[in-house]
Image (cartoon, rainbow, N blue to C red; front, side, top):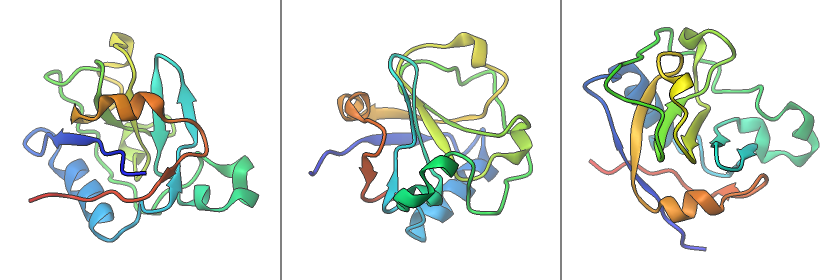
Length: 143
């Protein structure tokens, strides 16, 4: 389908995170990934390249580009509110890589623990309809 969602990115507050995600998007890294985590009213997550392969379903959520960002660009200015886009990580925010999530509702307890690097500005209805196994056809970056 042609469902589209657009986000603003916070390059001034999370420059390395935004540069990393934008670089991956420009190399078509995200194309064909599946949504691997949905918690209704909480979060939708994607960004694991293993999710292209249904036979690796048990591993979904454990992979990335293999190039962790290496810094935790967590800003008090950007909160976990509806439509916030943030970098997932395996316990240490410096190890965030390609996986990201979009908030389906506010979760202030996550503020200060994850780098919020964007905000959905249109198409939140599309995000709210996503389900596990839905395919991300394309992630593109507008100048």
